[in-house]
Length: 481
Image (cartoon, rainbow, N blue to C red; front, side, top):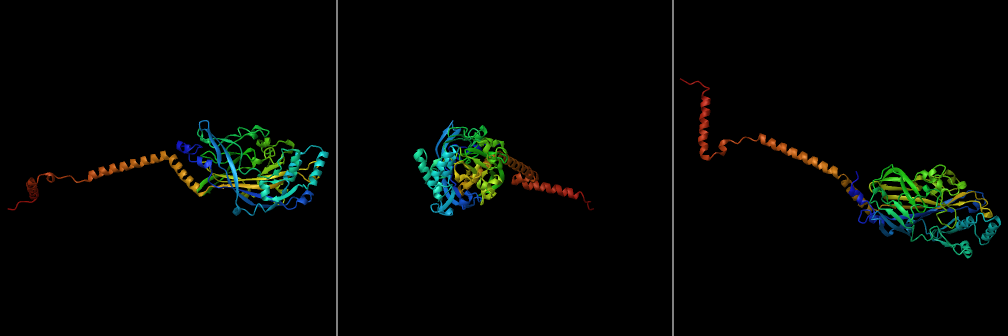
């Protein structure tokens, strides 16, 4: 039976043991970016070879993510907050200078424009294609790592802005992300039920999404990955909602681990999470175009991730846990479980992450589009752009605090047994003392009368006893004549 004190200490309430860490996580969070540099773009566009990629990275940033505007709701049973993310580059943990290092990759703004013009007619598409060629736009581009991440002014988007003023002429994979948040989350505090600790109640004011085809796909399940209910079991299915994917995923127990002396369970997404609808009926709602559903291991998030109108597809790095055809279509892609898996190491007593690796890959779906000669040799390649690794390991000070808290929780949870054991020990001690007391009383010699008599009577008493003894002794011998 769970002790009430233990559960109260692990709730999102002011003054609890975990609230301050939840508000402003002390362990440093790092995000590493690994770019895929294309070394044969011309051969690929001509249909003469598979794309050949080399991995560039990591380019590492320290990520700060304190919670702002924290407000308790419904008598403290829920709490709302915004998680504001900011990034600081760490040259000592990076392979090079992002302002200098160049990367060649898919021209995502161009693909976005082409994708937006699907179905406009051959002649209209051909005219726009000619215009794109006149300003030097191709399907691949070369920019610095910093420009690819944080943004640059794209010439095609600048010209498009003259036609459509609402067009953003800047493009970047992390454009406007520094200092941003993912919207308001409302969480259960766990005050009413410890199993609800950290579970999301609403995101951006909604209990469900409206992006996918089925209610099951639109459900906002579980936590945001920063907190889980205490007293986890190995059999649990842990649900996590990820705003970057605009969907919930689940994780299963993999193995027991230890992080800085703290025991933990490792949970990781199984293959079923990104399986196609034909192999996992739970995922049928994530395919919005039934005749163009993707295979295992990838997810089209164009409806969610706004990179213009680019067909953005996410996967695990190097198509880990995906269909083999995606990795085989590209030279330089080789999934390795230990390097590319996503996992959470959670202390089962507190439900607190002590180590985490969140890894995801951003890809662009390259297809042939009528009226655009640049795409004539494309055959539906899922083309990797970069993958990121968002990691955190508990710091030494927090580890020491958790170890102390775990000791307290262990002692408190076993308090009745401790009291019972002490009672048994005290009872045994009392029994031993009583037995020894009576044993000492039995073997003690009796007190003689003369010891307590007055000294003046002791001599007379002694003489009387001596005469009696002599009389008894003499009766055993015959008298002499």
